[in-house]
Length: 151
Image 1 (cartoon, rainbow, N blue to C red):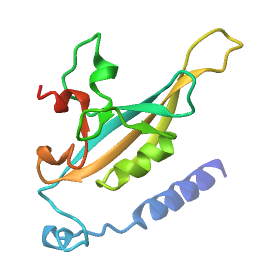
Image 2: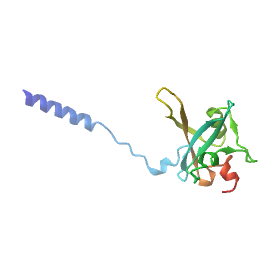
Image 3: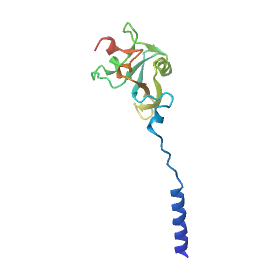
Image 4: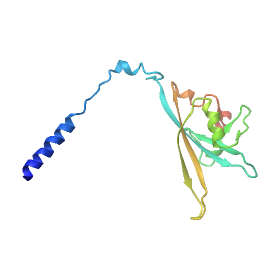
């Protein structure tokens, strides 16, 4: 009796495994998808904010893998205006809305906690992405303090 049940279970398992169909998509069809550019590259950036003393505004730094010195990494990565003055954002949402104008999209956020066990402080990081045709488009529309100084 056990052999009959085992044989029946095996046959059912083979029937289910064989029931899946493979759908192939020709490479020519992929390029016809709206918004798909096979030459584009997806780039990522990490936003982090530092609070300003005696202010509700935040300074936002952006890290897209650029070279920075260890001591001035946060300062060099601050987003600045045309005159080189740090842009003070109301919040991370304000910074995201600003960068969204230039094609950046939200991917994920995470918090790195610090302090004592009872302290719930931490640094919030947002991961953004943008599809570009050329790497020079990464900072299109904005600049960091380091770029403004010409490094």
